[in-house]
Image (cartoon, rainbow, N blue to C red):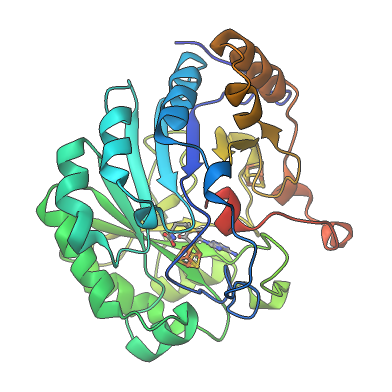
Amino acid sequence: MVTLLDKLGRPLRDLRISVTDRCNFRCTYCMPKEVFGKDFPYLEKNHIMTFEEIDRIVGIFTRLGVTKVRLTGGEPLLRKNLPELVSNLSMREVELAMTTNGVLLPRYAPALSAAGLDRVTVSLDAIDEGTFASITDSGHTVAAVLAGIEAAESVGLGPIKINTVVKRNVNENEMLDLIARFSDRDIAVRFIEYMDVGSTNGWKMDDVVPAQEIRQIVGASKAIKPNNANDVAKMYRLENGGEVGIISSVTEPFCGNCSRARISADGRLFLCLFSNKGLDLLSPMRKGLSDEYLEEEISRFWRSRSDRYSEIRTDSHKDRNRIEMSYIGG
Ligand code: SAM
Ligand code: SF4
Ligand code: SF4
């Protein structure tokens, strides 16, 4: 396998592709309604990668060492005919996953599974309907997300993971209920520290519930050895025998293991969630440049990479023009 190393010796292994910058939720920490309203300048259709372009890019990245591809967004299930893309990508030698808010899974899970999707991660921040409604701000329900998880499970899109962003005084008291809800199933809940991605969510350090406190609240005392050195979630054994994951992006950063690249829906390659410099891949493709040219450009970009934003997070970064999570794909 090809191993492309960046300046800090990190290999390129994972690729996250945003298939749309639109979403049917308005999570306050990601796409606050006041900013992402009707007049927000979403990407225009002709600036969004086609399925053929995405497939071509994935082909190039697999030759550069990528073994895992994750479809994301925005809400990836809003992209029309997504199973067709999954079907194309399933011919590639990669593990194929998707991150979704889950409410459209009852409609699409069977077709996605038949098309070759391997597994899904579903985001769910609360079990209590009121808390969920105040976070997601869009009229959708916990019941609808749970139905989505059931639908994914019933067609074998597992092992399913649940992502929960924990925000101070918003949902830290939901953690035990979330664990209890999935404790009898092969579904791991992963708690994510609220991150300062983008510039629209008004992030402050006081809103972060540190991993150390999450471990105390959920009773995660015994760390489980990771299967894969590049896993971002640290897994813990609970007293009742279950498992829980914690993604401590802010207080215990893991930039040293960061093997991910991200591509926005308009085909720009970003090597860090906090970067604002993307490499445009779509224009050269549309100008007819060759795969060899793109491979060379991507390799050069990865080799020159030294980002480790979470390890050096400082106030001086606050005013930068940061890209949004819904654009770059979480
Ligand atoms: N819409 C899909 C979903 O919510 O699963 C996929 C895209 S979403 C941007 C991907 C993940 O990013 C979700 O699990 C979401 O909770 C997480 N996320 C978004 N903003 C975040 C933030 N500021 N800090 C931590 N995680 C965040
Ligand atoms: Fe949409 Fe996902 Fe962002 Fe929530 S976290 S607004 S579901 S993209
Ligand atoms: Fe990777 Fe950037 Fe996150 Fe560090 S801050 S883990 S380099 S994406």
